[in-house]
Each structure stands twice: as structure tokens, then as C-alpha cells.
Length: 348
Figure (spheres, rainbow, N blue to C red):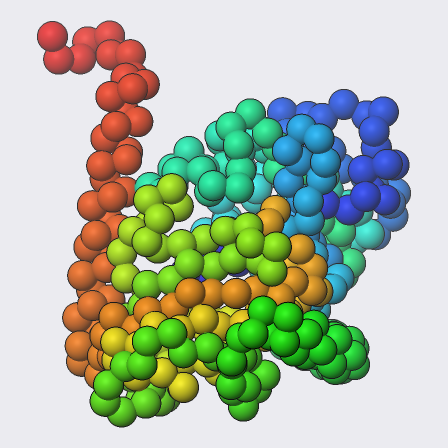
């Protein structure tokens, strides 16, 4: 899905600079502030924006960083100012920015997820806020200029990340070895560094890069906190999850490297635990409220089935239909709960 790829960020410095200013009302429950640099060109329709972006969730007591491009190996985000490719509420605000400006946005969790068929994620609570900002670092008039800047920025960010990852990998590996020794766990190290503990062996050929794996899973932190599961109804997505091991993006979305690393050691019917070093999971960024930066993750994995490409395409189509049905059911329930007043002159 391409429609609005970037996620805004919470910049503490920007927030501290504008605490005394009132938020302005935008559309769709959005409130915003622009911290102007007082100079620089205004972004024009069709221009490409280089943005340092991230997102922060406030649970009423503390802030948790969800994502931040400043620590991402992908580097800053590059987005075209185009009303066809971003929600109107955001377009109206972004077109006001000048080079060097920072934007701070807040939106209540209820509003942010009001159209989601899965509802509000388990780690968010109604009434709390997502705070966001974006700093407009640069403006480019052509895609070629933007692509060139993107490649340079990404290369620099990835080199920096390699150095950080190497040190973190050694630290995580020692942590895991100590954990295994303390708890008498027998686990085998996969090629990239994921440790796999086989609970129940499967049968047949080992998973490889020609297949899509249908799985059940539960993810936990080293502290035992469950952050996601497709077998626990509390997480609102109780159906087998497809792990695309191929290079065909139409057969499924990518997963963290630790999964594809460990999955190659399993066969159909196998049950296992994956111990995933942070560099093969969500790295220095973390993910959501429960997965802190540089978190080692533990997954209970069951290989329900191993699908060839044709079978996987059929499974993908079935999953899309299920999601569409869930979306319709959710929207119908919202419409019944909040009926629109009838316009004068309409049906009686």
C-alpha cells in the first residue's frame, strides 16, 4: 500500500519550543502547530520533501517512542506533496510548510484508528494521544534530485547502523547465551544469529526461499510481556499469518529478518521458539510501547502449513476477502452506532 507511506515523529526539542503556543484545529480530529524557521521556500505542489520524522505515544504518564527516522537505517523520509497520495487533512497542513520548519501534530487514539477494522491496537488506550512532528529538512523540485539525496542519506544511515549493530549483536549474543545457560535451554544458532529451540519437530523438507509459511505465533519480550499474537483474541487478528520467504512481494509483506532466519530451520508441523537479537528484530528504534529500543524478542512459532506460490496466492486472496468483510462489518457497526441525520427532502 503506497498511499501515505511516512509516519510523523515526536521531536522533543520542537515540542519544548512551542509549549506556549496553542494548537490549531485541523480536519479529522487533528490538532497542529508549525514552528517556523522564518526563512526558506514554501513547499509547492509536486515538490519532494525530505523529512526527519517519528511518532510518540503518551499513555497519560509517560511518552514512548514508536519510530524515529533519525535512528532508522533507511534515513529520512522523502515524500511528494500530492493531494492524490496523502489524506486531505495532512495535505492541508503540509502545504503550509517552508524549508526548515517543524510541524507538531497531536491526534487522539480514538480518531487515529476510527476506520480500522481491527480497532485500536492493544497497547493504545482510548482517550490518549499520539504526538507527532516532522521537520522539513529540504525541498526538491524533481524526482531525480530527491532520489539522489535519498540514496546518499540512506547510505550514510546504513553505514552508521552497521557499526551500531555489530556492537549490539555481540551484546545480545552474550545475553542470550547467559539466558540459555541459566534456564538450561538447548537452542541452535541460525545463519544470521537467531537462536531456534525446537519444541516439536515437524516433517518433510525444510522451509526455503521458494515457499510461503502459514504460521501461528505469540511474541514476547525477554521480560515475559506479550506484545502480539495471532492465537490470542485480545489482539484482534486470530487467523494464520503468512510468512513470505520468496522475493515476490505479491505473496505477502516482509517480516523481521529474525523470522526468515529461523524459519529455514523448521518443517511443516514444527513448533519452536525463536530468540531474536534486536538487530534482527526492531533494532534501535523499537516498536510500539512494549518493544523498547534494542529489545531481544522471543516468539512461540507453529508451522501450520508450507505453501507453494499458487497456494500462497489463493491464501492471500482469501485473506484479503476476510479483511474486506471485517472492514465492512466494522463500518456498518460504526454507522449504526452513529447514524447520520437525514437531510431535508430525503426519503420519508
